[in-house]
Length: 315
Image (tube, rainbow, N blue to C red; front, top):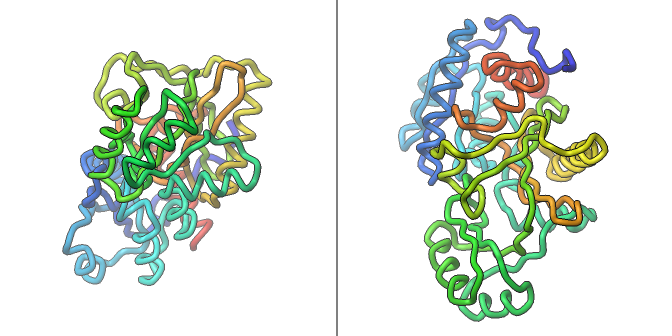
């Protein structure tokens, strides 16, 4: 492990830290768990940290509390999409993670894919669905199976694998209840990997396995039969290729501090970028803490490293 990952700052140097969690997105329940774990780790380490469940009174709390910096653990819209980042910048409060542009871009799966595609980075073919006619056109162009995704949700919320036009129309209608913009992608048949970045370094990749049709919400947060492989099962050359691709994907989006990239590998060994998360989960089932442990950092060291990056990046 590179020593640069660990924070060498005195916990008191962070000042009064507000852990922002909860919020009102579809990922609220996950964020509540992530925030509780981050807050406990910071307080145990000696950081003067307190929590704010971000709700309608957040602006009043922001003005009333003395906040030296913010640790953002808000998953999804309202916390991971650039809006909270912009508010904190206007308030002059340093914060963890990516800035406004990278946060907004990564939250938009369509725009992220367009950026990757423009740079020649591999990402599955896709279409945008707005009506039943789009569903039929996408089926004819892309074939089956396909996976349907709300463009601005995380944690696999609203996602579904489909194998017929009828299933595609139903999945599009269901996904539309979460988001006005819905994507459909070619299904990549093969192993899935998730790779975290921390302070500019790629952490050990994790290979994922689940008996579910894909790595859905239940497999991520509830199931006990999800498999996590570290080492990920790739040979050294392919693992290096995956790490380089991850770094390029994050650089294209402009992520900062920490992030996590989801990747599929097809039967020919080709990697395909799915999405990048700028505020990944920090629960007992979450992947970034697993990758950090494989790199030699326990949970407390991980949150301190994320917080230390906010000092180095934003003062």
